[in-house]
Image 1 (cartoon, rainbow, N blue to C red):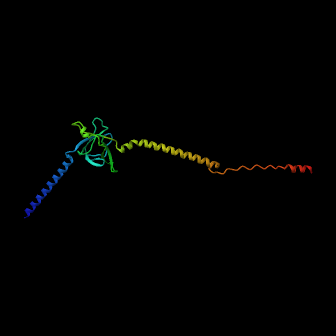
Image 2 (cartoon, rainbow, N blue to C red):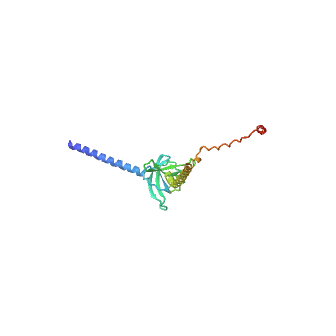
Length: 213
């Protein structure tokens, strides 16, 4: 009886171990192979892709359409980063579609955002010669654009600061002059000129009468 119980537990243990291995293998296969209908696209970024990792999502107007498959420096131009992405076949990638790097919140996590794709534009995969990987054009991320404009913004702030200092200096000089000369104060009462003394004239008739006397 005890032997049968041990045998039963042994079989259950083997089943659990086998099932765990099978599940792990299926998970790895799913991550590496992906969908059979996925299409491989290539993107060249003219900026750092720091924060982007393999398996990170690729979104089209915020909707997940694929994942990052490979990253490497461009062989011909090491200033560029070559990123291969696997996108679902139904993803509307067209000749005017643009790719850019987006920052997710303040966590430092980066993902690829696709946008554009006019209704009349041609499908990118359809116009790409056979045997070549369709390449999605990239554009600078908003963060990189802001960093590029930062020197000009700081220069403008410096000019405003200089103007503010000049205004404060001018106000200080005017205040000092007013303090030294109270007559320069706005609304200060002006001294009234003293009235001229009235001339006394004797009427002609009275002057004649006085002479006759």
